[in-house]
Image 1 (cartoon, one colour):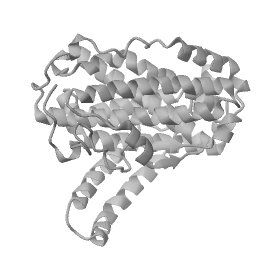
Image 2 (image 1 turned 60 degrees about the vertical axis):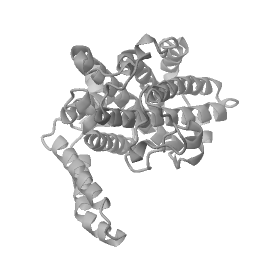
Image 3 (image 1 turned 60 degrees about the horizontal axis):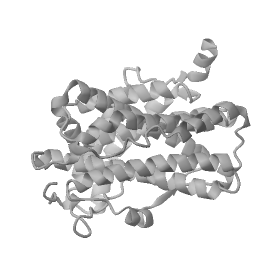
Length: 358
């Protein structure tokens, strides 16, 4: 255990309970959806694949993985304050993201229980994993005399409505990018153990397989709905969600560069690797993906990140809201322009590549 971190952002609403991070475009969001539409989804075209992923979820390979061992029974005072602050911020956002998934999947399971038994069971198993992840991370925060009040988050977070198709696109990408984030950190620390300052990182290899299985489940949902990959709308939505996820990831990694430095990682190269691998993985599910090898792709994403930093500096001033709005107008226009250019760039036709393989 260590002394409670006395940074304003980590002081709790009561002793030991951390104040929830302020909601912004970059913080993990909580979602709800059209449960009737989800219950009525026709999965018959992918019945065999659905049965296979459901069996994988039932197997619960990590049922005994998330158990704290003797590695955690030590004093963490040796971790310097800069590292602790960056690490606790990572823990909070990760816990919030996992808990958000738990709430969505739990409610889907409950709403579908009497209307689509197998789909309800699958969401129940997904919720099981997400709850396990969130609890394990929250327990890690207690080593720093902090924790999140998950009940408070449940009641007080803003819930965003997404249509089922949007949920499928978004959660697929969230799970797959989560896989690449965790496995990249794990493999780096495996080769550079001198940067591993807390045992949670040793759990990432098996942990990320949960993320991978969850992504595979949403891939089956996506491929079972022809309108999501055969229509021009499906192609546009696929590119839209890829762009929003990659832009958000780039801005978030850049914002938290200190955390990646504590692990001995170069934040920019880490982000580029994760984005490339997630885009490559998405070829297996999406009708189109972005061309991450285009010479302007990362340049434009990283310019958006620089614009975000400029806006944060403006927000930190005492200027009136109208003045701040006007000062941020050029950077906001620049960001929109760069994102639009990425979106309109020639994509990679995954369906054409898939037909070539077969």
